[in-house]
Each structure stands twice: as structure tokens, then as C-alpha cells.
Image 1 (cartoon, helix red, strand yellow):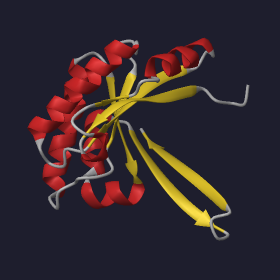
Image 2: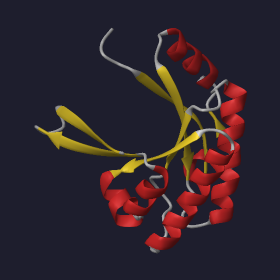
Image 3: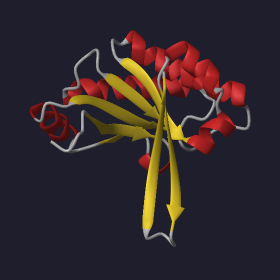
Image 4: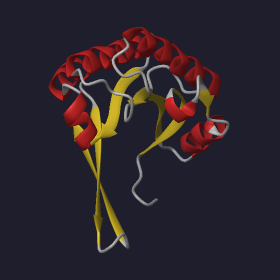
Length: 158
């Protein structure tokens, strides 16, 4: 045991380089292996919908469909990976993210939001998301010593 308590598996994605709907061909095995190792397992879905609430809800339905297909149990977390495609309207981006997360919640899963710290602070009202849904993961990559060493900082807001 190296101290890991959970595993988060990419279920799929939509938009940008993911195309209309990418499904991770290894997700079922990755989820099963995490469960066998005694880890809490979760899934994430790359969603590039910017500020479009209709697209956000559609992508949430794809995420839920993928979760069910790959064996992620209801009650587990599905995180939205929101790192590209945001509009210049922070309020509209936030509303679209909330639409995605609400659809995940209504399907019986726990919604969460992941993005890079700078991207999220620039494009999303993180206080509103945090107050509504409670879980944000913000990654911040700091590169030191000419790329020979990388530190990943993960901040979790409750």
C-alpha cells in the first residue's frame, strides 16, 4: 500500500479533440482493478461545452451512459474535466457547468468539477459552484529546475 485511497478513471469525453463522443476502451478494466485493490473509485468526463447549457446537459447524459456501461456504481463521483472551450462570460460558463453537474446529480451520481487553477479562477465562479455542489479539484502544475522536476498541487475545496 503506497497510501492511495481512491482512483479516478476517465470514462470518456466530448468536444475538442475528443470528437462527438469518445469512450475510454479501458475504463471497465480500470474501474474493476481499482475496486479489486480496495480503492474508492470515481470517473471523470472531458466536457468542452463552454457556456452552452444544452450541450452541457447532453454531455452529462453521455457521461452517465458511459458510467453505467463501464460499471461505475450509482452514488459514485463523476467529475467534469473542464479545461478548454470556455466563453468570455464567466456567469454563462458557470451556469453551463451547473447544468452538467445537476444532471449528474439527478442521475444518482455525485458531481464534482476538475480544472486547472488558473483556468478555473479565470473562467468560472468557483464560489457559486462550491456553494451549490461542494467539490472542486483544482490542479496547479509548477515546473522547477528546467523541467527535470514537476510538483503537482491538488487543492480540494469542501
